[in-house]
Image (cartoon, rainbow, N blue to C red; front, side):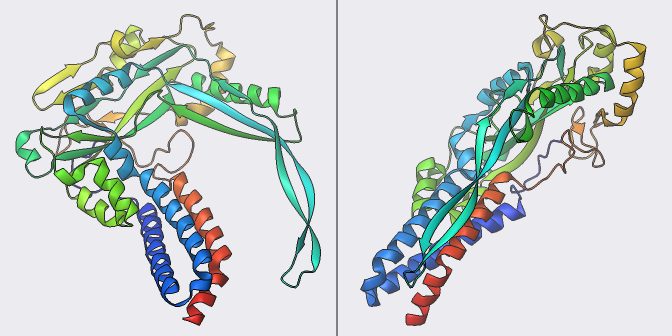
Amino acid sequence: MLDQGEQKENNFYWKCCCWFLQIIDWLTLLALIIVLIKFQKIALKMSIAFIIIHFIYILVEIFSPTGKYICNKSSGKVMHEKMGRYFRTAPDIIFHGVCYHNEIIYYTKKDKFGIPHQYKKTKKVVTFEPEEKMPYYSVRDVSGLFYLNCDKALAKKKPFIKLKLKEEINFADAISLMDYQNEIDKFYSRHQYKDKYFEFKEERKVPGLIHHNLIKMGEDEPFLSKYFFFILATFLTLSELYKIYFNSLCIFQRFKIRKLISTRYDLNQPFYQEKYQPFIPQIILINQTYNYKPQDYNYLNNSYQVNLPTQEELEKAQKYEDKVPNYQVSSGNGQIHSGIIIDSPNYPNYMGQPSDQQPAPVEVFKIIINHLYHHYQLKIIKIFKLI
């Protein structure tokens, strides 16, 4: 669903993590200043702690959504060209595997009294990492209408649009979904016994898709919105305050690039042309409309060996019918333009996960902070006791 409302990108967990790291960085800097004034003996250790925390802080901020938006700045015309390219690009479904075993390593470590103790730890040893692309016959883009309002009157209030793009790659029919499950089973059977343990994960993507895009509404842009000032604010430990300023300049908008895959049928045939007519990709930039013809956004893999499903296969595939998406388009009521696809809140995404799941960087961030907290907890407590 396309959201043209003037709202900031809102991920509560990510914001909390960023602010937590920002405050930790400030407190570490304050402690370092106090140490440099009163306790020169431990200044080196405190300086190292600050450098480590500040380095992590800089990395997190540079690779934050705001950093990605500012890096991918473009005009509305350039964004139109990008969207057309995304509509024409065939997606990839990639199977990743990890074959590994565990080894126990023994090591000796002295305690604070100098007495050696023997410890053991388990090490994961990866022996093979297979990767394969799932083959398919045809693809149809069903993204619907992409509406981008770059009106100059609106640009006086908000000079930028933060456009968040996502890909959603599903299967057009139950038989294709069954073939997909069979391909996973084959991948398992080929690789799972190459070592003691086997891990599987899957990636679905539109090659070349940039998820965070910043679109200039006009020729002029605020002086402080340049990437240099974001980096400067980050090095000065002021990036969270800079984000508040930057978000005040932006309208937030989401859009999904949707692809349907079929392993047995040509989605260019007349039956599918009629079925998916309401979902044909379209672009509206102010008063200009671009409609895409099937040959512009559909893909057919002529090298793929196609076998029409038998009656037995069709009967087996019936259990997947409820997992095939049923898209709907808006009739244009309210602020939603006609032709925009409406997401059903009851329909799970292709991985069976909630659509607004917590991003992976948050989990990584939690691990880093937890490790740093336990590592430096005692040292920081001792410093403040001395103060």
